[in-house]
Length: 247
Image 1 (cartoon, one colour):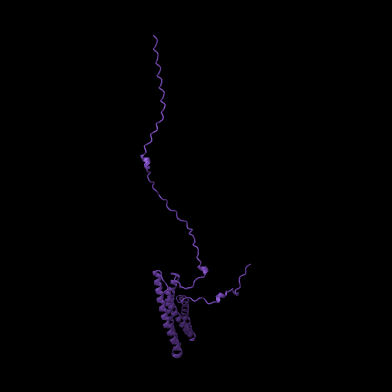
Image 2: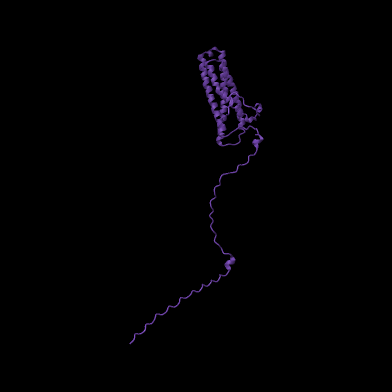
């Protein structure tokens, strides 16, 4: 009977798992940087909503998330430009998707920069002025800002969607610059082709006319062999002559 391992048992983790990984080259940092700002900026509207409905102190959390996400967006765009310069060839459709991805990413970065500055102004003004702290002003102002933030998130989502097309449809990957282990670099013997070859169509050959050799053509014809004599049939006996009648 095989017992299932306990849910609280710790697996055997090798010590190499606690060693920092090898850092990739600068042109390969995009794949490591791009996901963090996307996650932060997509979560920011939730904290803006909490600050609008419950406590303004949640607005500071929203502002911190916006600042970190926007800073990550700048880093993601820069590393993406470096990664783009490493792409050598591809179909025309891939280059169109790449250009659209870059345009949307730059636009999302710029929009979030403006959105973050605006929210910092709104949040700071709410703590300095009692007029803006009133619910009649605070809630409509945050609703307008929340609509702008959601529009910026849609722009960000479309930019990320184009990046997913590059990776999963056209196979554009980052060059990590890390050589595989020696075991993985070993040459794999070629697998023989086991496909049954198609039979070749039969060749139709036209027989050439037989030409007698020159020495045979000039040789005299062999004398014909005389046919063996056939035996002549024996002559037929004459019929008997009848005797004359007596007188």
